[in-house]
Every structure is written in structure tokens, then in C-alpha cells.
Length: 427
Length: 208
Picture (cartoon, rainbow over the protein chains, first blue to last red):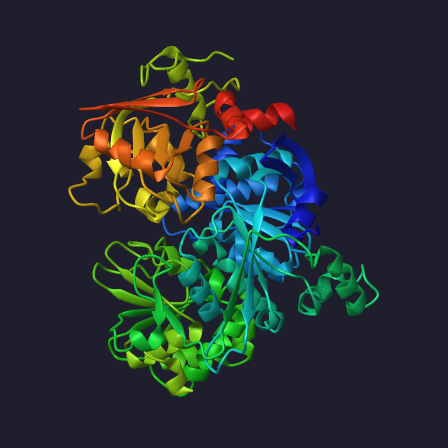
């Protein structure tokens, strides 16, 4: 029987087989941010093991609370900063160069097809969009990753998720993944890899594929993955042009990671997205999803545009389509956090930032920001936010607050109308 | 490696103290010898009767700025809303959590495991776990025990005041309340090795 992309990556990285159900993999990229890494750093230091397995394979960013908001977050940033310096980690991104890890690191070309990637962050599954195996881990896994360059996983089963049909106007990658999570539920893919296939995925940009893979964890998946193709090669071209004669050669090489036609899957599901309406969450779990038409009229207090799910240039362009020449509703406050400095600067060049500002948005620096209620944009009890983020857990954006997850287009429409609304009517 | 006696849950002893000392992260403490021992398992049960309890409910993100595990202690399950549940009162003295499906879903924060660890809750028994939470438990040398729904139902029925003892060798647990209930559990051999080693760092440091 043939192999899936994940089985091929596992085979190429296998360091040890500690039991019939587990493997220990060599890790190509260990990514670190200031929330989950400092405790690992302190622990290594306390044990007299303050070293890293390979400084070139460790990527570090301060992104969750930046600029630091208080003494505690300043200490977290300092621990990370000092550690990166004393261990000669060159790929360290501080204020001025920092952005959300899952947008910044792909942009820097750090993720390649066939790689193994870990980070102390559940949305690490985003990087599967490049045909990599990328998994969120806890601080102990991160600590061992930093020290030894290895990580243990249960042998993965793969769910093949085929996205068929054609997306209608005003319907995007975010709507697709919300629809998939609705069907699978929040633990429908636990201990599995979600392999996204089909014509809709093939036609998606890298940004859209990242949006899809980003939310695989919300169905419990270890990783989301797309097969690396021409879109991947073109995105990565500035970083791989020394390795390949042309894009064609890269595309051909990437094919070695593709799942075989006779690969075995634990489950196969097809979603025909033709006629799919924009989607929105209504409860405190990301699988509580409705057509936006069923939620129309629900009043909102805040709009948040950003995060590792939907803070990329493509997302800003889409939202600007609705915001151009319009104002946000009187009772609404709206926040835009471009995901990276590159996104921010590109949005400036394209005139998007002006559109957001004239509509009444506050534009912040690149940061995880309001998504997890750690720094800015926190909700008061009883307040409601239309958000392009990935989690609607109770209290996520502030105690007693309610978050409705949706696409950037739908969030822009909600900002203008002051309530959840079908954005297709405004295009 | 010294192993504490099974079936004597939560008995404070020297090993436990040493273990606690080693697991703490005090940035300014001088280097200590690297020594890890297996934890003790068992004790009074805290029942959390809901599926999909997520890591934001276990430890809200605003506390992720704490730089030591001990500092998390007062915030255990702070955002969990269950009828009649008061985290400050109900978590006191507990050594074991018994809950439903998909426990620990959401963020990768190991703080969700540490907040139990510093409150001396070293065992969570559930129908199923989110992958990262489960791995974090074993990585910290703690027990995430999966049982079929009928056994979880039986555990809930033993209540309300229940104490669980765990025999690691026989992979058996005994719940004593107004009734008594005994059942087998199965640990993946690698997960068990992590628990015996006192966690993934100790295991990996020896082996890789």
C-alpha cells in the first residue's frame, strides 16, 4: 500500500521507535514565542542545560504581547531576548521586525515541504499548508526540542478532506474550514492529520491554505496539511532559487512528498462547497457554526481583524472591498492588527490602511493582540465581537465576552452594519 | 529509580518534596542537581461533569504571563462555569479529576497541566483527551487515563465523596465512595515509560 504525505515525512525523520504506537522524530524547525518558551528556558537554566541543539533551526519571535504591557510581560520578552542572544539564535524577531509567528515564519521562508516543525503554540498546524508536518506542542516538548531537536508523536492516521465544487462570491477559506469543523466537531480529528485535497484547495493561494490548516486544531487534529505544488513553489521561490533551476524543477521535486494514489486513510470526507454561504460561529465552541444568514441582525460591539488565521494581506484586501468609502457603525469599535510588518507595509503601499482608518478602524502593530485577550482589545462582560480569529471559547477575548468567528469580509460587513450581516449583499 | 508505594495516594514524603523542588522554575535559584522521580497518584476526586473543557477554562490566557508554575496555583479552573462549581472551594484537597470527553482541548499551554500539578492533582481520568493536553500530562510525568464511557459513568455514580487509588503495576484503579468501583486501565507503554521516568525531559536526556 502507498503512503500519505505525513507517513513519508515521518519515515524521513524517524529517530526512534519507543513503542509500537509512538515515534520520535528529528525536528527541522523549532519555533518559539514569549508565552510558552520562557518557562522552558528557565527550567533548562536551572538544570544547568542552557544550550540549544542547533541555533540555525530555532526561530524566535515576541508576538503575543508586544510592545510589553507590564512588568511581567516585559520579563517574558527579556528572558526570550537574552536567551536568543546568548545561544546565538540569529532568527530572532523583536519589536520593529516582529509579527505573528504563524504569518511571519512562512513569510521568511523558514517552512519547506517535507519539514517537521514544532512550536509551543496550538496553531502551529498552520504550517502544514506548505506540505510540512507541523504540530503544536507543550513547553516540555518544546524544551526537549530546543535541547535535543527531537519530539515524540503517536503514529498518525490521516483523514482525507476533499473540498469539491466552486466557492461563490464572498465566500472564502475561512468559511470552508468553519464548515468542515462544524461537520467533524471539536474532537472529530483528534490524533489525526487532516489532509486537505481537491480542486478548491488546489486553487487556493498559500494565504488561504494557511487559513484552512490554521484551524485544523479546532477539530482536534495534530496537523493540517496540503500537498506542495506550483503555488507552494512560487511562494517559496525567493528562498529556494539557489536550489532549483526553475520553479518547474521545484514543483517536480516537491512531488516526492505527495500522498500516493493508493495511500491508506482512516477516513475520507468530501465537502461540496458550491453554494456554501458565509459561515459564522454562534456559541463557545468552534464547531458551533451556522450560515451567516441565520445570524443576521445580531448586534456587535467590536470587530477584530487580524490573527494567525486571517491577518494576512489577502485578508486585508478582501475586507477593504467592503470598507472602501464606508464608515463603521456608530456603536462599533473596530481594530485591525496586520499580522506582520510586511503585511502592514504592503497594506500601506496599496492604500488599504487608509481605507481602514477612514472607515474608523484603529490600526495596531502586528501582534496576536485581542485574539486571546492578553493585551489589547479585551471585551467587557456582555460585549460581543465579530472576529476573524480562530477561537470563540468562553472568556477567550475577556471574561464574559462573546466572540463570533467569521471571514474578514463578513467582519468588515459587521463593522459597517453594527450587526452580523450577509457580506454578499454589500459587494 | 525509587518508586513510591502504590495505593498510598497523596502521602507527603521526602520524594514528593524533592520532586516538587525539582519541578519548580525559580529563575534566580542556583543550579540544582538534575534529579527527577515518579510522582504519586490518587486521592480525593473532583468531578467535572462536562465534555470539551478547554484550556482557557482551566487557566485563562491572562495568567500566561506568570513565569513560575507555583504562581499559577490560585487560578485553577477559574473560568470554568458549571452548576454549583466554585474552583476556590471545590479544588481544595483534590488529587484526581474525573471528567467527560475531549478534556483539555484548545491551546497548547502546558500551564493547564502545571496548574493541576502545583495543586497536587496528578491524575485526570476522562473518556478522551485533546492530544496536546494528554501529551503534556505524560511529559510532566502525570497520568491522563482514558476509560470507556461506561466506566466514567460508573465513577460518577460512586460519588459524591470519592477517593481513587491507583496501582500502576496492575493498571487498576479503585474508587471508594458510598460504593466501591474497580476497573482496569491501559497505558500506552511509551506513556508509561514517561511516567516512570518522571517525564519526557528526563527520558529524552538519557536516550537522545
